[in-house]
Image 1 (tube, rainbow, N blue to C red):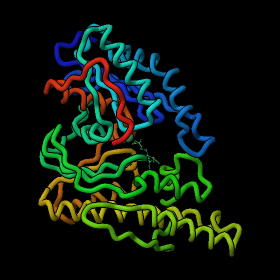
Image 2 (image 1 turned 30 degrees about the horizontal axis):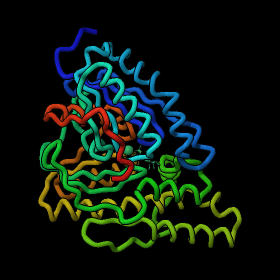
Image 3 (image 1 turned 90 degrees about the vertical axis):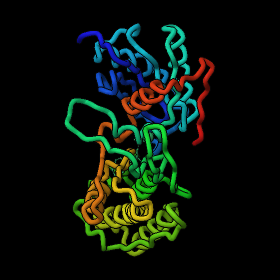
Length: 340
Ligand code: KG4
Ligand code: ZN
């Protein structure tokens, strides 16, 4: 691979349970490497201390591999972008310290990235596939295991949060629902899979009534738990027999909460473009529902490829690209911000 003449950003992500590094040249992906952490599966959720240790083990080989695949020498980097937060403090510290040391050794700028903003900027990653990026303004529904927000985006670095979850994140609602059904962590993709064979109207769940564009999932979670417990009290094989219908019903309720608010925001804000970001945007019912909403209300719809929806470092490098271009650098004593 030839030496690049443009802006070369190394992105580093370590906010939760993926250690990731990516290299972008002028916003085009040269490499996007991720090491997941199987160690959490047996515990039914991410164990912070185990996550930090795994990041320590993975960070050097993952960054090395990202540079190797990209065909980039460290001396060719323009800047290093890292996830400053939100996330698990011990996990964030690993990426932050690594990025700080590498920027110091290479004497290049260091860029601190907000993980949730980076999910939105995943729409602008280029990788050779013909895929239009949304023009401004657009509304982004950011849905992951840790966050659920509707954001109005007026520019790469101009985002206004219109609404957020008041309790659990949408991904958490999927994962906790899956746990009630005895499915392993993370349960979101399994709910999606089982729901394909289920009847979503079999077990109607109560939808919350929240103000404005805010959302809530904790009542839904309790109602679902009660439904399952009542079923099991009458029939010990209830979950086994009804699994697809239970998954489809839960999925419909979660997706309904999200799309009602997104639709309301698009209508009231007069914005003609809607977009999804975050791990839950991999959900097939949410994708289908968003596309249908777009058709019904004549809105343009943008959904990034799956690899850029779940946690990845290409989106961190993309955010780093925009921040670097505007001169938003941080000093070498930058610290993580675990909370949003
Ligand atoms: O964005 P992400 O990779 O990590 C966070 O920043 O949280 O999102 C992970 C979340 C998990 O809760 C996972 O269950 C959920 O995304 N998820 C899904 C699907 N794929 C991933 N939820 C529902 N359906 C899916 N197909
Ligand atoms: Zn995320």
